Length: 175
Length: 165
Image 1 (spheres, rainbow over the protein chains, first blue to last red):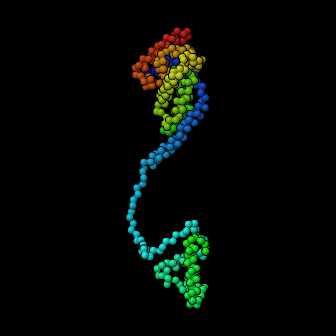
Image 2: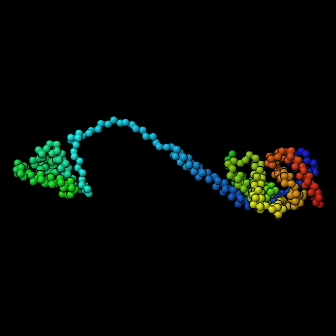
Image 3: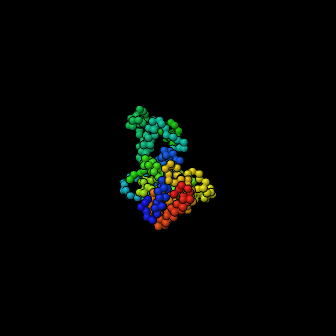
């Protein structure tokens, strides 16, 4: 302290005497204070991650808000589409209200056979009707006598029953 | 330079704590002065890097904290001659002291606050007049003049007490 100029010897003596007085000790517990200081410091450091996460979340939200709708590009693709002519379009068959597909495989087979037979009749006429009823599971085979064996009159009840079967199917009744 | 470790902080606390508390008591009572010092050390611990001039940083921080605390006390009208009613001594009495600690305390209390602050920073803060000028934000010449005036006043008061300088 003596490097400062302008002090008289008496002032320097007083300065030295005052400097001999020791400031009173603090009443803070040193160890407790250091613990608190370390804890406060750790708390502040740990606060960095939540703050960083929150900031990134806000940035992500803002970027999503300002991104806008994605641009939809229409690319024309040429394809060959086969369209059935109106004259040959099969008539649509709408099931009756409340009709549910049956789980019976025999019924499904009968329905498929009926549709095929109907299409043939619609395009070729009544002559398309087979002379002998075919087995549904094996088309072309029959368990019944041929028309030649039983006569054409025998075949008419069979056709009648087929028509009744069609009516039942359209009404949604079970066979 | 990395962050401050607790051992380093403990060393600074031992070296500067009592002197900083003495400095803070220019404005506050003993308890509040120690609170301010404690807060300053906690702030120091939170620094990413220790300040280049640790002593200057500590005294400046304690000064700012003490003056802020004093303003809060005045706003709340709790500040009623704190220094006069503070019964805790500023100094530890030692057998080899050349001055009586209580007389010295009273003589310091009688100084204008600006002079008293400069004396404490100079003698117990062990700072140069230039460093003091930066803290109190006054020209060095003004600080020098105030310090000389303060020493002269102290000498006059201490001479009036028998057995003192």
